[in-house]
Length: 445
Image (cartoon, rainbow, N blue to C red; front, side):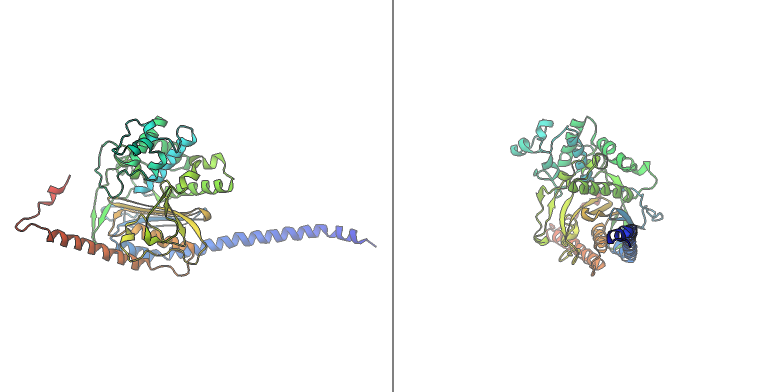
């Protein structure tokens, strides 16, 4: 008769088989569970189309392209309205838009490339590299460093100052940074971007060329949206690689290529935080820890006590919480919505962009490898790009009760229209009796 030990040994192959079967079942459940989750998410995002179109119509926005990544996978792309002045061509996910201030994150990454190559330090003083960097405030001239420029901590002209278009000497923080990158790399800042970030990531159509509208077929043409619902065609603003503010908002890109950029940025962040980064995978963003760390506090009392800080080209926030601090929508509604109520707390990174004829918005959640990108080809009555981005973000989070973003859009439009009325009344009140306004053309230039 076999001993107990012999009988147990005889069972060993069966135990191994059972163990393998259990692992196979667990893997199957996890894989298919993820697939089911993604399918349901895609269905939820696709169901937003009617409301997105309503938001575009209510805000007088001609067209939009959107994209969503979740857990590192593309889960949704949508394109709405028209991309051309004739209102005859629909956009797609490769359509080029001017992305406005989404440019800032890329230029910060270009500075990071120079830091990783040893050509620059984040604490390098600007005046040591560009002796001509002089400001009326001697403290700024003597101590301003690279992070100060990228985090907008210098006291130099910001968004509340009008700027002229065309060829000009550098007057703004990002223009000073371009001079620094050009000096230490011995090539223009946009070439540093193309060679070290765009090309390695496969961003072959992203450009800073002033000829982008004529060099490409699939491009968006800009509009100005009127509160009456009318769309007024406008020429693209003159902001590109050799003009003032080019490094702040001169990049043109598409949803597909921005998704490549943000996915790589989040991957580098994840690899750095877990200590698993490889030189190949994170090369364009080897300085990602500095790029995404907080460097300045954004004062916005209505956002409460949750984090609202500025990294290098991206705002840092916390979910659940209020976002969109850079969007004009913050001043157009009684209260910004709290995004992600009841969901797991996590960090969110975001930025808005705006130029004549174009608005943009991007949100990143590195902990779940998720991001949302929205590009529109209109200066709308309110920031339709950011309302749509927040709508997609809240749906992505799986919030049980999603806010009514159509109602928020309508509230924003109403407030904006009253602003114009109030401004007109104040101007009329101050008019000198017996005088007439000059012809409109007199105010141009």
